[in-house]
Image 1 (cartoon, rainbow, N blue to C red):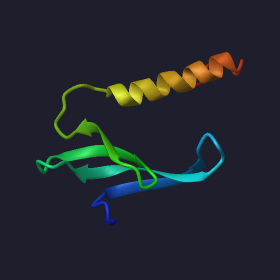
Image 2 (spheres, rainbow, N blue to C red):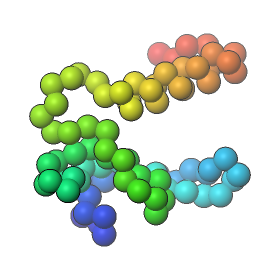
Image 3 (cartoon, helix red, strand yellow):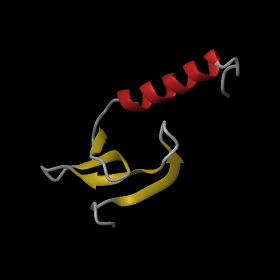
Image 4 (spheres, rainbow, N blue to C red):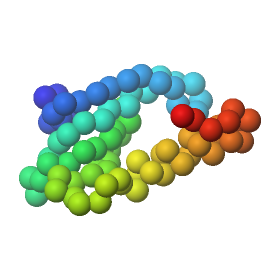
Amino acid sequence: MTTRGWYKERTLTTVDTVGREVSVTTGLTRDPEGRLVAAIAISDGPTAIYRYAGEVAEGTELVRNTADTVKELRRLAGMGPTI
């Protein structure tokens, strides 16, 4: 666990839209009610929940939106569909 209280965290470094390095962390943590959640955070910014433990839906809207955004980027850049 880190200072955010995350379990099974994964962090990578990328750049923001002006070229500054930022870290993006995904992992498991607890919400204020103590429920286990999947979450994402960028650098020292707030943590956003994208999945609660026990949800029955197969996917999540945040994950779908992210995948659709990457598909649109590839289409507009003429890169073709992903596998």
